[in-house]
Length: 216
Image (tube, rainbow, N blue to C red; front, side, top):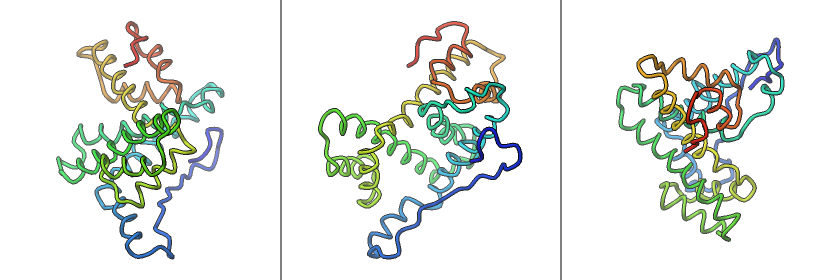
């Protein structure tokens, strides 16, 4: 995405990692299972609209430079992961079960990241054990499952996809109760993204008049 201080360039780029040309055919097919058509729609919601692309379009509008550049991992990835479920819940795809299955599979992958991140860095889980976790619980083929496990060795923060999503869902429900009949999903999203990407507990303080400390 373009940076928050860009005044001219607003282009963003969407990269998809194809299988390596020198991989065996079987491994290439395993990798491509992660990019089926329904899954690509879910990923596009996360990466582009209304996930990361829309989120980062808000940053130049924030009048506080510190809030434009200081971002919480849980907020950034939590928002994008939240939108995957939210879009289907409000009717995107007209109830196509393939899209819901793709969304749930991505959610299972993020749940496994949460577990793997903690266990690999505090309880001695190995890369092989983490690979099996993604295979057995997120229904991934061996190649993408291993890739997820390897990422966990250097990115323990990838647990924030699930953590952030859960915190934003909790914030939305608390905000809904607060606003009552005046609640608007659009207004909630606008207010949330208008904050930038602060730690979600700070977002709760900004949006809620009461119960702001009850994170989960």
